[in-house]
Length: 218
Length: 237
Image (cartoon, rainbow over all chains, first blue to last red; front, side, top):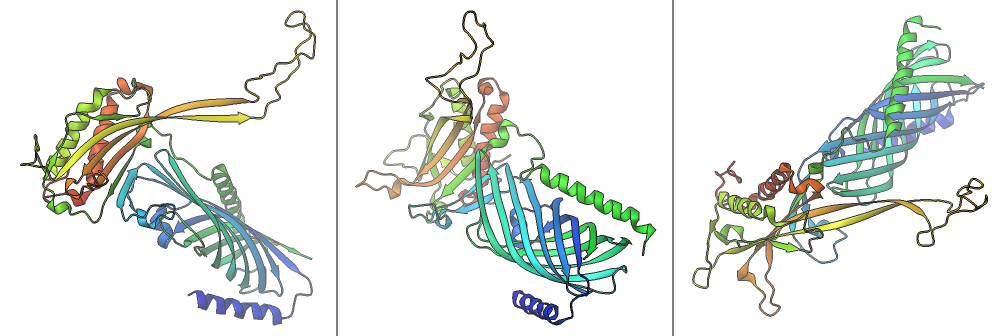
């Protein structure tokens, strides 16, 4: 899936670079509220929908349908749980004494993942401006993630920068000239790049977005 | 093109976005509710995966609890010792182990259980930058003019300090067969630890006994490899 995404992004980018640019430039800014659903290993760590998310974006149109975009966002995943944590001391890099002891930890836990994506991408908008415009987008960039586990009187925390990509599909619904309602779905995938709590895993989630978009011509 | 029918959805979109900003910016680490003292209790168990628990059928348990490095005997006195020992005994019996009351060379136990408690005191200081000098209102206190200040030669900055005490109950399972005679060491093949806050009401709080009891039960609940007979509930409760 990673290779197909890269190939598709390269195709869209080549279209962007070879098509005629607009006589007048157009910029679209988007502001959305996001509800995110953790997937894969992320869901194993925090198994709860995030209702705390937002993103802002700038989209520069090279022609009426193709745009370069930059989006920044923030999603907070949090869960209170008492699930048993199985441990194997041989997997802990901080242990200096060699041991193959195993065990388990139980107690009231608060689990958090804060994800901050900073993604550059390409988007294609079908149809014409001032009409309902479905769109598709691909992006890649940097994700800053903060993972935290509070259990008992102990807090464990890991934060790191990760490379990742996003895929998005949605629709712009014009409300008035220059203003549109944005509805969309987006998949974010931030690859593991270091130590994480609960074993190495990629941070992945699917988001539903609703917000507004304002367009400006220059 | 102006679509009047979509003005309300667009306004809802703005409202949703503002709500999202409010929720998101309100906390990186949101807690949905306040915590009680028992919410800080944790139970940790460790075991040697190379130990043959299936071959261990009998155990010996002393009649006293070891008190290690107790910070404040008022908060970690011996009022719970009998409860701790009875809970460990009940759980071991429920797992299918048989207790040997007087183990000796002719009738040794397969494992020996050692029970201990300990407590620690933690101090936390929160410091704020503070100009140690400030002006006094002229002529107050009497006879000292404006410009006099207060300084603290023994503590250069102000701070807020608080302390909290934690307590632990430790249950150790020793395998005498694997004793290292040369080093005079006895290996532990299983360890259970309860850790939590000791609040000032430990002496009178009836919930404290429940916390200890539930903690010991949880030790054995999360150690299914100790079970002798799978048809028996580990706690028998």
